[in-house]
Every structure is written in C-alpha cells, then in structure tokens.
Length: 223
Image (tube, rainbow, N blue to C red; front, top):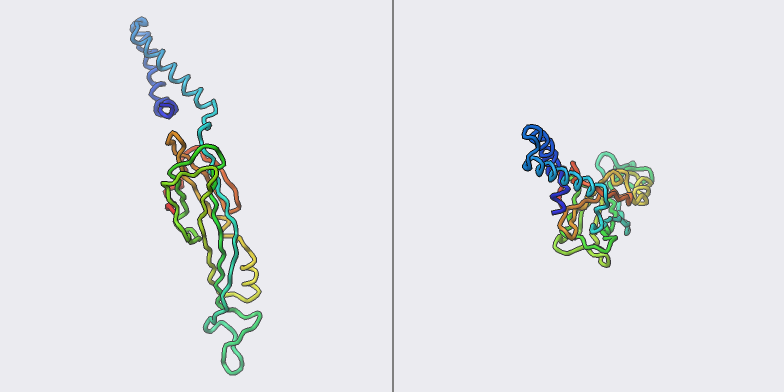
C-alpha cells in the first residue's frame, strides 16, 4: 500500500483528480461529488509529499561490497615468435629487456555485506557484459543476506600480454589495474517489504546507494 501511495503514477492521477474536481465543482456549484473528489485527491497529494519528505529507509538493508586482493602469480615467460630475442645461432634466449609472453593472474575476494539489522532478499550481482573478471563460484539469490553472514565470491583477473621481465614485475605488483578501476558492479536486492533496491560499487571500494533502478542495467548481465 505504501509503495502505491509513493508511486508517481498515483500522484499524477490524484493531481488530475484534483484539477478535474475543481472544474467540476465550479460547474455544479460544489455539489458533494466534486467536493469528495477534491478532498480525496488533495489528501492523496499531501500523503505523497509527506512520504517523500519523511525517511523511508527504516526497513531497508544496507548492502555494500568490498574487493580484497588475495594474491597473484606469474607464469614462466613464453617465446613470442619473431619478437623475443635470439642469440647469434638463431636460438631464442632470455634477456632482461627482451619481450616475452607472460600470463599474470590476480585473485580477489568480492565480499558482500549487509550492514544493517534487516535482511536482504533475492540478492543479485550485475556486471557489465564486457566484464574483465572471471568468477570462480556462484551466488544463490535464494539465501538471505544477513548482518552476521557476509557472502564471498572468488574472482580472478588474468593479463596475457607480451612484455619485458621488468614490465611483468610492475603488472604483478599492481594489484588493481587501471581497467579494473573503471569496472562497475551493481547489487540488486529486496527489503522486508519486497521493494527492490540497488547499490553501486567500484573496485576502489566505493559504495553508493541508488534511489531507483539504474538506466545502464540493460548493459549488464547477472553474475
């Protein structure tokens, strides 16, 4: 009922009812029908304004995400034909400044917490369709997210590229690549009243509560 009273469509109907009731009242010398319509419409508009002004998040869970680096690894350098250095005999050799194929893997825990006393239901994680991470385990939306039981998703990010040993050292030490800083994750969940809510997260551990469904959600996929 509360969601209906807060709905903008309901407000517009009440506004039309108020204006129409006023016109009707002038035409009929304010008989009881237009008077009732004006009174009910006015009451509905006042209720809408009050509900929008007063805090409405008492039952809302606060879902926040955190990305924790858990380690990285680097494979032995691979030869890149016609690019990696050779000796005088034409055999590929390892040189500090030479370019080789490296595979670097960074591992993370995506920790999902409910920082409130109210349970979050039907939790879903949305990521861009071109998301750079690989998820190791799945997330079940049927299990409520409670304050005492955070959920953890294992994630991997792989870099496969030609580079020197020094460059691979930099890539291995850089636990959050520039491309990852630009990634964005959306958490969708429901409160006790089954109202759908959203949180917006970036890997810089920045969380933002959204007041409405994000427009870019159609560019995302469910994790």
